[in-house]
Image 1 (cartoon, one colour):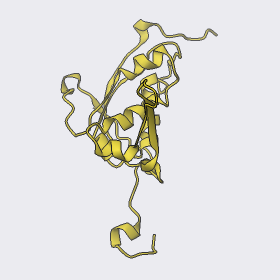
Image 2 (cartoon, helix red, strand yellow; image 1 turned 120 degrees about the horizontal axis):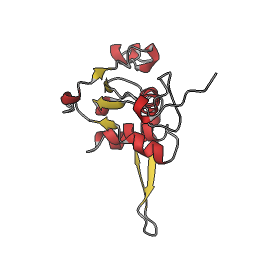
Image 3 (cartoon, rainbow, N blue to C red; image 1 turned 60 degrees about the vertical axis):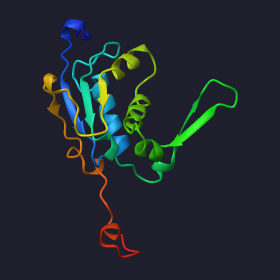
Length: 165
């Protein structure tokens, strides 16, 4: 029995569109990372770019559990004393809310050249329009895969009565 190792001729890439409205960020990012690497395919080869192309729409309407909206992203400008930070909530309400999804997916991929190449197959849009209709993407409904993939409001938040959940 020989181990199958895919070659570039064996790779079949598809296009998928995912609606992120109401979906929990971490669960969405793990599904996207798995699809970008190609781990959902039976012919997965770790050293090849076997993943599909993913289009994410409505990134500004992503949900987070707990206090994750208050967690900070840090970066450095390269100048002395140039450390900067923003919370995830500030980024979602700012000009580029798609960066939260991009960073979550990037951090779920292993580091290296191959992962950077696979990240180029991810396109994230803040609104509902994506402009990639020519590729004929299939709809991947992440919200219906598992009940935990979406965040529902508690009863107290919808009825307005304090103390009940």
